[in-house]
Amino acid sequence: MKKAILVVGLLLLVVWGATRFPATGQWVYQATTRVEAMLYGFDKTSVAVGDLTFSLYQRNGTDAKAPTLVLLHGYTASKELWLRFAHQLDERYQVLIPDLAGHGETGFDPQWSYRPTAQATRVKRMLDALSVEQAVLIGNSMGGLIAANFAIDHAGQTQALVVIDPAGVRAPIPSRAELLFQQGESPFEIDSWQDFQEFYKLTMAEPPFVPDFVLRGMAERYQQRKAQYVQIAEDFRNLDQLDGRLQQIEVPTLVIWGSVDQLLDASSAEVWQQQLPQSELEIFAGVGHMPMVERPAQTAGRVQEFLKGIE
Image (cartoon, rainbow, N blue to C red):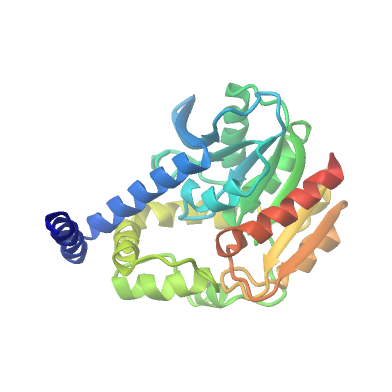
């Protein structure tokens, strides 16, 4: 009985702390993802490349010669978003999930460039440091744009490409977010809890359950990093875009898109498919901007089906 009372008391303390201090939600999120990574067999490690040190998850116990998959997150996101997707991937793959420069635990420096080609070069240096000669690049949103630039600039190190709701081309039909950008507003620039709620609605059609106090912690983090995110967006939204350049990608490519994506409209999917020399297209009905989060098992299954076809 005393133990039960103690547990309830601790839970009430956490809820109270989360209400009063958004940092509590951040701490709970970080602690939960650390446990999740451990249960899924991923170690958190670091790789130094020049003036930057990547923080990344790496699947433990995998043969160094195994096929390598590199998972690249989107703008304002972090490596943790890939964990449930990565858990669904066959254990014979070596899986690397880095925080890109300016994001997560890799850190931000105002002197760095955040243009897609610079980010792709950093990923190459990370792979070189890990002695990975060739990899499959898998990227969501901004990560898809970076992965595509990697495939263009470092073709010899690219085995295949998977892009999930990628940025980089002008959509025939502008998304809700793009319309806001055209009006001079960015849904990613968060000044309040209300701003974050509106932004979060745009990101996913089928979001996994996240407690309200954890979301408040995320909102606080967005507010703290607003100036950093603005600088990153200036680079990645305006430089190294892919219109007229997709034909340069010579490796097999899988394009996955959520049909109700409000950040990057699904009409862009056909642009990618039509311009890529070797491509497959999969549209997930009723899914938003992050299929690997909304439907991790289905997305991983489709990716593995594609990979089996090119091996």
